[in-house]
Image 1 (cartoon, one colour):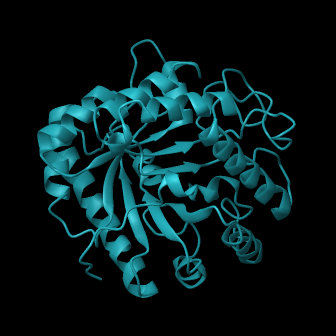
Image 2 (tube, one colour):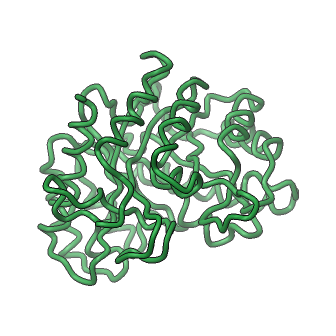
Length: 329
């Protein structure tokens, strides 16, 4: 499906948001199409939401591509992230691999992703995919030069108008056990600039906190991305410095907001608070309106062993309301 203009993900200025809904889905791990349909219907009823982040795991849906193609809400667009598939080979392959064979294999996988993006648009009959998130794998061995070469090639492909993004994940830090362990933000910025492409950057608050081993420093990193002029969007997802329901300390498990009267379904161990969201948003705007992110989002995981669809939707709604309050502060 070819398009004549680029459609971005939703803008923060209209208080509409991307939701990484799979993290809270009642049917992501074990397939229950009736629960997923109820969940999607609830998301579609949220007026602030107009895009979902869709995980690409080598296919468009972890269980049933046809279900997604026939049930994707008609007013939503999609931000497709390849991180789930990237992590299956992150120790060996990646767009930032200095090994040409490994980099070429990652490029071949990215071409499969491209095919599914185009199929998504074609079968739904409109430009569904507004952005695609790529990643600077492999873990610990990537280089900015290799990433630049990959981006220069990938950007020549026809992505049906989707904005290509490098999603910054926790970087490889010597002496620190990584969750992702990809390139540092400054190297990703350098790679994009060197590639001469219109690729931009997206950030995930929780993955930045994992890299920085704390929540107070994230705003500075967001400010660095904004100052580069490449920051396109921010997903607010939590992290924790100690073990809890979501798992071990510094796990990338998309913790909900820290539990509070406004986030009664939140996570008591989470570092993500409305105050820290407000700090990040101020930093994102510090480089001026022209460099402010085009979209915001939330991705909050359901860590409990059970939970109704209504509870999961409430947790997402509370997170959205928290970001909206932070925007106004």
